[in-house]
Amino acid sequence: MSLEWFLLLGAALIGIGVWGALSQMSIVMLMMGLELMLNGVLLSVVAFWYYVAPDSAKGQVFAIIVMTLMAVEAALGFAIVIAVYRGKMLDTVDGAGDLKG
Amino acid sequence: MSMEIVVFVVLALAAMVSGWLVFRVDSMARATFSLLGSFLAVACLMLLLASEFLFAITFLMMIGEMVIMVLYMIAFMMNPAGLNPMNMVHQPRWAAAAGIVTFLVLASVILVTDWPVSEANPPADVTAAIGHELLGGSMLIFETAGVTLLTGMIAVMAMAARRGRFGDAIQVQREDDDGGGHDHGGHH
Amino acid sequence: MNYGPVNWLAPPLALVLVILGVAWLAWVNRLAGDLARGRVSLETLMGPPRDMLRDLHKEFRLTERPDLALWLGAPLLLLTLTMAALTVLPLSPDWVGADSSVGVVFFTAMFALTLVAAYWAGWGPNSKYPLIAGYRFVGLMLAYEMPLAITVIAVALPAESLSVSSIVATQQAAYWNALTQPLGLVIYLLCALAVPFWGPFNVVNAPELAGGALVELSGAPKLLWRFGQYALLLTTSAFAVPLFFGGGAGPWWPAPVWSLVKILLVSGALVALGHGLGRLRLDRFMWWAWVVLIPLSLLNLFLIGLLILIWPGLAGK
Image (cartoon, rainbow over all chains, first blue to last red; front, side):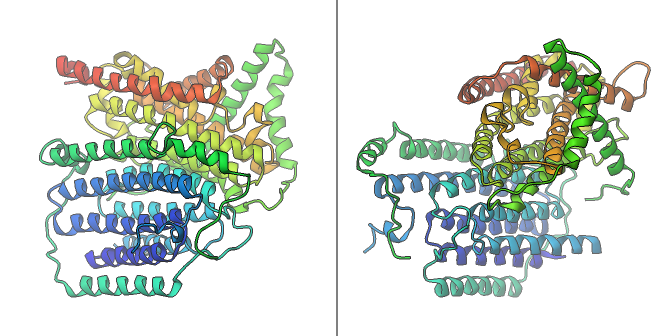
């Protein structure tokens, strides 16, 4: 098992996340695509720590910060979903394009 | 050594398949729990990378996050149990193409680059090393993350709570709502 | 990553011990209920086995369009998380499944899976009373998970390690955590009641919701769900023994025997306490956890840190 295996798995998760985030109409499903992408990133960070720089713990701190930011992003995404719903009574991205163009 | 390869292959397949299933199942509850399964498979993969603390922390956080997400899914999605299959995708071909292109670009970068793999071993007690690092050299990052979390919480309260910035919108909406459902903007 | 040779005797032995422990808890529960009503008789002894046999021979009824994978997965997940959490419980320094260096965080993570199991039991049957019960439990558990996590961190502080065995070793070298952190013990025991939704926290099998998750369950899955609840209560109170009561420390008997005796005593006490504490409305419980227990557990953490700085002898140095 080498670094490339873990990175390829991370890339696959990022690819699936991109597909999901771009194809879903509902905001919450789009967030799930973003979470999958961050999942791939998290795995890649830990793989890099283990194979490239295992003697210091900074890679693990990086992974903890990535996880913290995942939680913050999810919470803010949910708050945006609620605010959009309260303003416009809809929960898809297609109708929420007011700032476009 | 071979046992580790078997474990890696099984967990990698579990992570990818459950990640793919998130967007294919009809029931919204099952989609969220399949995302949780993908996260837990990745957390178990971290055990192969000598990161026991991250494994346990990922379990804790992702379980809480996914259960909260399933509450939102059931509240906001029009078809929570998947009993009437609906097609809620837009630009499906472009999205699939973007996903495949992303994976190919990343995979080519991964396979072409000569990674500086180091021969060093992880510290004997990784958890203690993390602790010393968090409260030592990376203290500034730690504090900044804490302040970011606090800012995020305040922003969430301002956007979503009744006494927040959009609290009055709740009143207005309740007067207009004649009991009908909500529309989804766009088209089906 | 090398945990040594696998001891194939450990999982069956653990299962046998859990079954015996659940039988003990079922009888203590029955006895406490009958004592409260003043009706102790032969029925107290025969009641639990008869309930078990009755559930086993009833058929499993389906509801209309249930989510069968999640509904039947709920009791299985409850039992799985219990056995996984028991992996890091040391009955003695030699009798432990796998002494992980992050044992404390590991079992907290396993208890967090109760959220998922209770949600599945609520969502699966496609019926409104289990759904309400499951949602209520999510709110309750999210509130009580925080004091639990902070209190176990405070317990790990004197040992300077997250592994449960070193917490036991530190207590055997110095003082039991029940003496140095009484506030932490009370908070932990409250959370140990809340995680398996027992007694006053029983919002999942709620009597006021016509049984909650038990409404639509029948037959063997119902027995497994209740077995899983008892097993989880056994596990949460079992962890109080190595974390607060010194593990297998005791005068004459060997360590595993003392551990088992202490586990039976603590879990029996919690089961009986469930009959004594009253029910409040759910949001009062959640208010208690967020507004009172979290600051108290942070205070506990601060106090034990201060005490160790002043008297290093408390940590066995």
